[in-house]
Length: 116
Image 1: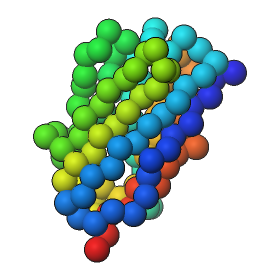
Image 2 (image 1 turned 90 degrees about the vertical axis):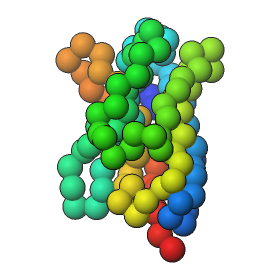
Image 3 (image 1 turned 90 degrees about the horizontal axis):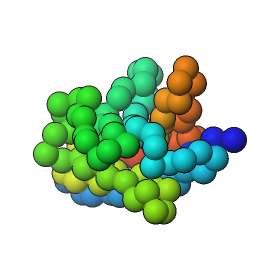
Image 4 (image 1 turned 180 degrees about the vertical axis):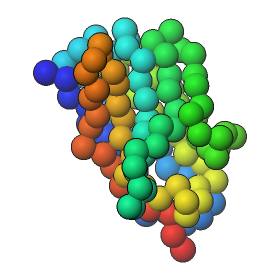
């Protein structure tokens, strides 16, 4: 059974930083592309960043370029999202997610709130 468990969210002031983690189990983590997606209040899912199984990185939203970094530790089955210079518009529930064939899996999410 595929399981994705996010952690590291919280309340942070504008300009602050957070590091999100996602621990994966139930599949061969290193063989799959992994994503961070987010959902702001009242909005749909927004793809943020993707890291390929081979390490290549794709930014799906320009607003995080230069501020967010995605990485993975295949030995620890863990995906990371380093978020710097956070803005109020980054407030959302953040999910790690992966596609396996026709199946889409995501975790339960972790809330990130950027507010003074």
